Amino acid sequence: MKPNLENLKALVHCPVCSKEYRPAKMLLLDQEDKRSTLHLTCESCGASTLVYVSMSPIGVVSMGVLTDLEQGEAKRLFKGEAISSDEVLTVHQFLKEHDSVDELIR
Ligand SMILES: [Zn+2]
Image (cartoon, rainbow, N blue to C red; front, side, top):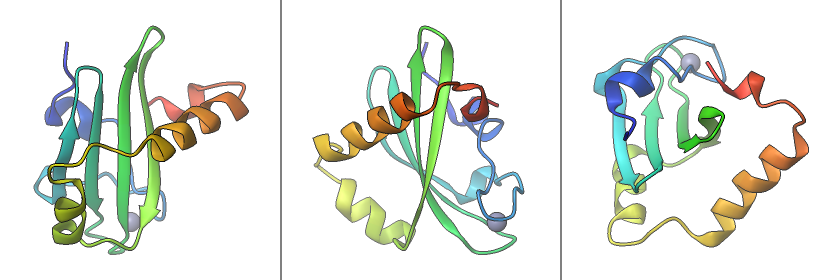
């Protein structure tokens, strides 16, 4: 099962002001079998976030990273280019350093 935008919007909140995102402000940058990357812009505080969502045996895991990229820039970056292995490693490292992933799952 691929996560779709409707499911994802219930998962992600602005890391700055904790408001839920509006789907209209979500841009799907990249989607593979079990992993999606979204660019989100918060309507309340204007913060932009890159969110990685992956399906794992324990459920859907999401991780948000604040970014300076506008949606257009993010789109250009991701167009025709998969997420770099560095970024994937960062996510893996993050998950490894956090004993519980509960805090990541909404
Ligand atoms: Zn916000």
